[in-house]
Amino acid sequence: MTNIAIFVSGNGTNCENIIRYFRNSDKATVSVVVSNKADAYALVRARKYDVPCEVIDKAMLQDREYTLKMLAGYNTDFIVLAGFLLMIPDYLIEAFPRKIINLHPALLPKYGGKGMYGHHVHEAVKQAGETETGMTVHYVSNVCDGGEIIAQYTTPISPDDSIEEIAAKEQALEQQYFPEVIDSIL
Image 1: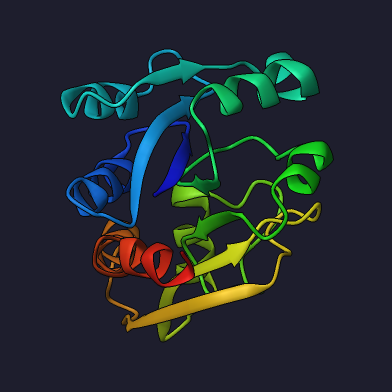
Image 2: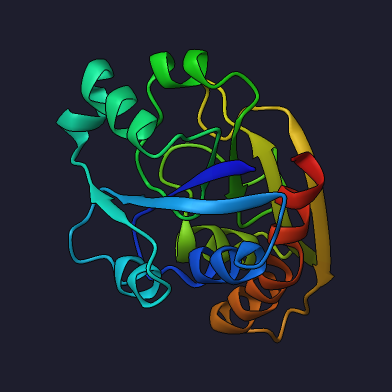
């Protein structure tokens, strides 16, 4: 059984979707949800399914001994970033080689990097006049949104779509495909 730690910073729709997907799996389970924000709604979602939660601030995340010990306490084998807004430190990438993945709400390498998250991404996609958008799942590296791409899914958009409509189309892809991509990697 693979123990998954989900790292989150916000609302947690993907977190909840992943928990539900693996809830009755004999392959993997979500053993802990880790957030850098104590008020992240993702923690409420996780607790609804009796998944343990940990809150770690930026300084704690930078503390190798603390973070690795915390993850070991949940027998963590694999880490999924689902809207986690802090950079993953090098020591964690080294401790979990090719075992940390991230979901990005655009078709990388476009619209990635520092400051490109959530509505910022969708605004940039609209402003550029793109005819499609999508999601990218990639391995985490020490370059923001620069790791090897695992999977991408696209959806058409039109010039008439609002930023909210673009976001909704992209988020529908996340809900449909992200747990399946995780499953295929495991």
